Length: 222
Image (tube, rainbow, N blue to C red; front, side, top):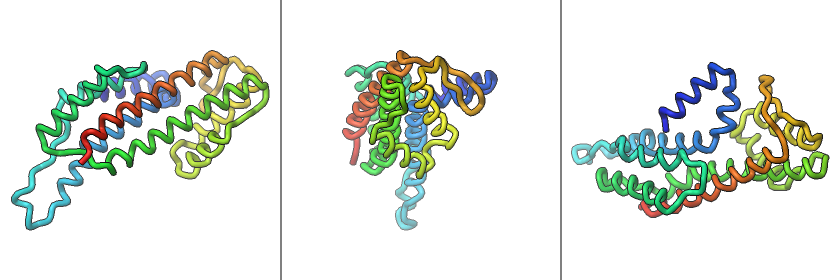
């Protein structure tokens, strides 16, 4: 997953479409950050928080190995609804990790980051609904959920101001039935009612998949 992400990011730089890279891959980017924080930064931080008197008994907390990460990557690269087999791959990776290292997730680990992902998912969903309503009514329309989450994203700096403005601009473009949307760098993207519906479908799948992934994570919380 890291290799794919870096490769795609490099291509985006060369083609001057960095904004499009993050727009298309925001969900998987958040998941990658979560896994990186969880198994490389957070566990190592926890490993240093051992009282001096217990230092001789302390063991270095290990990150996930290549086999375990490979199982995660295979599942998280999917854009369709996850199957029982996909969830079993995640479960198998976590079981391998906990059996091998003796390290389990805490509820704070899971809640801390999945809360942000859920908020981002909800924001994207409400944006999609607002775009669709604006397109059909031929005037700018936003749901109460979008207004609330937009302010939260703005106040917490979860989205760059340019990205938030791009989303606001798309509402106007939807109301005017514009055939393309344009970001702050002048990059143009195909835009239509069908594109809006495809975006809603995609985020609906992402929300359901996240719920499934969290349910597996919860099995390994101690």
